[in-house]
Image 1 (cartoon, rainbow, N blue to C red):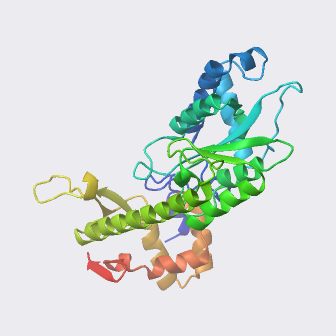
Image 2: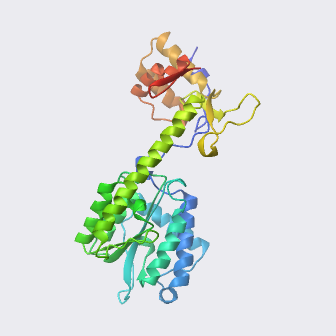
Image 3: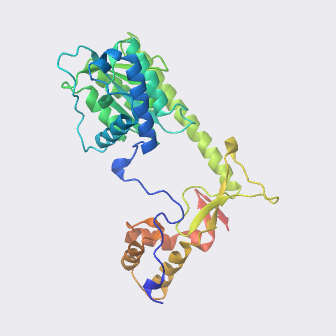
Length: 346
């Protein structure tokens, strides 16, 4: 059987989304960026009419929203530096904004909703947040600091050439779920004589008791994460016991809704729909082909990886020999599904 007889699979394979590059990790999608830009334009046009008249704030139009969204993306990806173009005679105190949204279980407010609250609070304090000083992360956890939006705003807030006095956040957990990082952020801002204000939790670094409160908030975030982790683990354990799939399906499989004996969908904790593995007709042939190439034709993992990349198996062109070895050793293809130290024979 010639290698070329198999048709090239469509990009995306079994309907999976394209994997984002490391540089894109945390970047809000285009719709979210447009929503952020629209909220900023609407709020700032309403809150700062004098800056609109001075040409500092552009008009609230769809075209300007798209332009701002594109500028945000370029700053996030490091293609453009953070540079303010404000009139030299402008006498207004500047501030910055950091937004983070992971999921509704963590904080139901979207980044756009968080931004609106911060803009309105900053106006009450007579501080102006330029679009260039708005940073955000999406679909990333706050338990570590490897977030490009977060790292960007930490650099911006202490940049003497920008001279922003205050960093606004929704609450401490939006900045960091890690106690050590939260305390480190507070110390960094204090050392540089900057303020940190939580719009929702009322945290204010200018408060004499702020250091003590920061410790309390940091401990609360640690407790929250531990409770959330326990909840997730319980849900995953229960789902696996019911026969649902945990994690991303391997190549050759797809996820379909679980059904009980009466044909009804099976629901897990929080009424979440459970999924189970099913053979994916589009990609299973390539898994079978990999086993034939390796066991019958004695081809190497390097050869199979190149073959997979040439055909864009599963919508990918980054197959490596080590990944092919893992594929050939995967117990799922032998009818055994594993999770931690448990297993099901399927």
